[in-house]
Image 1 (cartoon, rainbow, N blue to C red):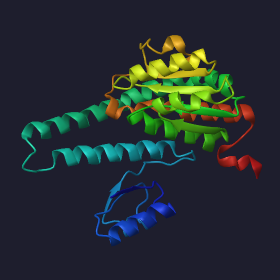
Image 2: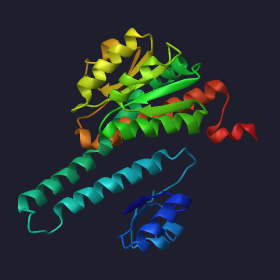
Image 3: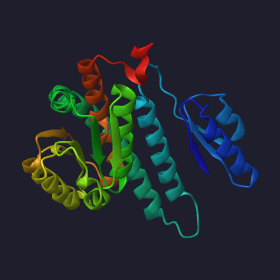
Image 4: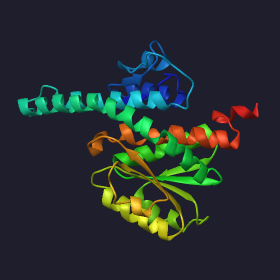
Length: 265
């Protein structure tokens, strides 16, 4: 059982780890804080600590935790077992090299979208609610980016699966509700394009988070946030959440708010 908490102090995560260990599970802590309560109850610990810290709604720690989980998955994939061949081990090593290259793509994307995120913030800041959509690995990205809008700007936001939105939330008012469609290349891209088109028809303010040069959903969007660099769908969460911190920050500035409602005190 893998438990993730950057601080190592999240009460329910510590409790879950303690219970899992009591039932005989091997427990692994992925954390950025050595000596924390989580490390003390887990059998093993993977440290994903950052070289320097700064106040933020869990953006850099999320990236570090996500990277740690991907590295665990790759290591499990190449662990010595009768059914694991040398080719599988080499493939795992090649995938690890892909992760290293993504650091440059993260930097390029963050620089490229910053000013466009300011324009997107102006487009959506008056909305009482926002929705982030994605499927497959991007469903987790949708949940995370919605959380950043709540924590960073105090705006109610939800993450939802593409298909589920088409069945349910498309019926919700207001008609011009902002909708962020997260659509990296991969199996869910066609569905994301279809949803973006339907949302545009319904009057939603659609923001497409897509690979640079991808025109599939761009024609159905009020704004496009382009992600730089080629990335496989499995690794795409490392790149496709980057807009959320910027948009939340600019929305908060426009509304005169601080993260976690600290402006109220």
